[in-house]
Length: 287
Ligand code: PDD
Image (tube, rainbow, N blue to C red; front, side, top):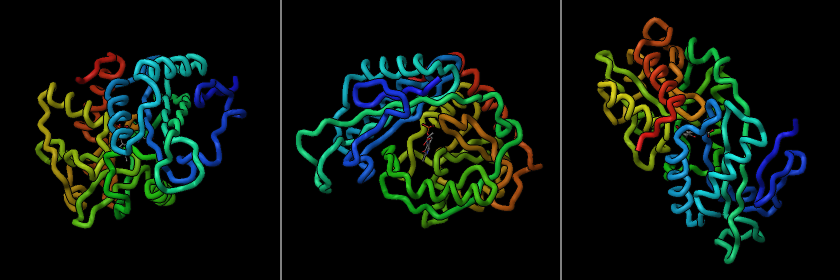
């Protein structure tokens, strides 16, 4: 079955789906995006993803291309057309098409693209085996809270991780403190079982999964601290894990060349993954 994409008002097969060469997303990275998990036919935390899309757009002065309701309906229709039960919905909004000029064009309509992907979340050894992360310098811009499509430093970092045989690269700021992964938030667990993750600010993306995990932890009585942690603290942590729409809670068992604990996923990470799976299938939203 040919994959179908939504492109500026039309549902097209991928072979025919295309955007203009002067789309500002293509030329300047002038746009934002969202990735929403689809599990058992339902979008996980759809509302906070749309909230973040609206925030990202407002931060760069692009209007929401249509009502929230219309975006939701198109997303659902695209998932239906592509028969996605488990996978993801990708939403991208760019400033639109205009002759190349750094200044914002006037009277241009934002461009909206949505695509979907099938993912077999069950067949992923990373959840049971855990993964390795490497540390790299954070070379990104100062507004990492905006989910910009300009992901060059993230791609370079992820490629370095892949070449090192690692799953993710944790980015480290000028003070030696971990910001986040290239496409996930970073967490450690202290010896006394407290979760630690960087506080919200412009240094990290405000992960929707991060938000859910904090709410789950609060509900289950797991202590947490939103504070930065250093590379050294991470390497001496009892456990570590990453969170994102596609990683859920993925245990980290090695940082650079340092194994964590006994080198297998720790009990806190495993329990959080179970709780998060229940949360996703339960369709509960944290509001
Ligand atoms: N990435 N930090 C960064 C830099 C990210 O790109 C992402 C998500 C996250 C986690 O956010 P969330 O929990 O809302 O998925 C943190 C998506 C999955 C991507 O780029 O594919």
